[in-house]
Length: 160
Image 1 (cartoon, rainbow, N blue to C red):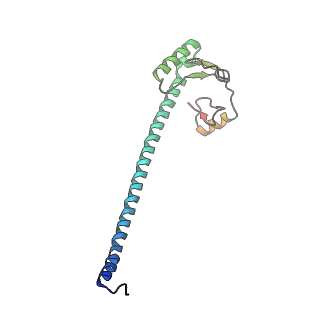
Image 2 (image 1 turned 180 degrees about the vertical axis):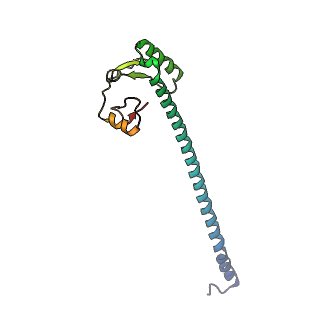
Image 3 (image 1 turned 90 degrees about the vertical axis):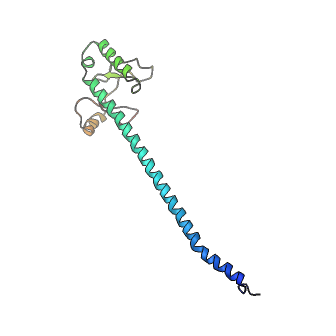
């Protein structure tokens, strides 16, 4: 018995061979659609990331500006500590969404005044010791307007 002997068998083989380019084209179009969708998703993620970075940078700039203004305020620099505490309390009331507490530390690391009392946590509100990294922070940031300290819980420089 001959498999391709009949006209019907030959026609089926011819149709199968003719369908191969159609299947290949469908697979190619599906792959291109997939690649385009992945590219669009990647672009959307990058846009969201850039927006988040911009929001965080704006928030950090606002904090830096506020802290720089506080460091220059006469109420913080002059003596009656009650005046400093009242000033920081007023500032904290205006910026409750941004700050948990505000405090001023003297040159020796002692707490000068704060907007609200620190909780009874070891080390807070007592004495912040200048660390060997202070000079490194001044050199790294290039700012000479005040003292800098490296907090023991983070490796970052505290800058105004």
